[in-house]
Image (cartoon, rainbow, N blue to C red; front, side, top):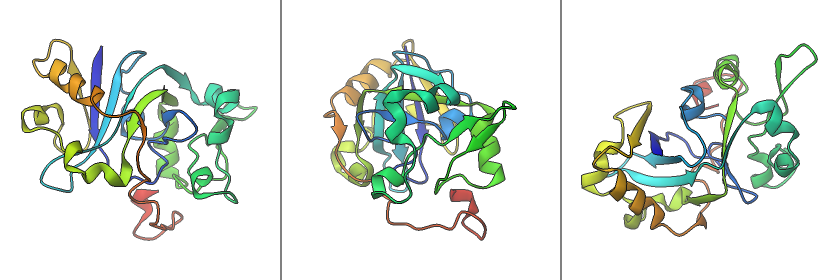
Length: 207
């Protein structure tokens, strides 16, 4: 068992996607870096734009599946984006499927529409899925979600992921702290009202 931790720069409900009873990661730092995460492992994401790291979400991984399996699974059809629906339905992360040639094709989506993002997403076409999770989004800045000083070595400085394994002296306390959080979604995504044009301009890196 291990905990994979990373830093979020944006939080719009796409990655993680904490809606419809499952928390899913389908196109994020952990996916792009081919994180070695399996069933019973944990993932935790933080904001670091304040003095202390603030917990955005954590999830216990129940399944790891490929994009095509995810696209076809009846449980995750509501995670396909509906651009004419509610803001939650527009956040869907179930956006890739394989065509007859075996190439990945992207459905209509608001996110990751540029070539660089698509290449990153499909290089390691995996989805992490969890039924047990806590998601705080805009409420991450509550002092109760501030990572205790003694646990801050579990986070890598800058972009990337860091594993905390059972052999790590911080593992037990870190896992206990995560599990102390009430389960479920407790807030909306911090950046849900930010409208970014993904097809060009200075904001391409966010799409």
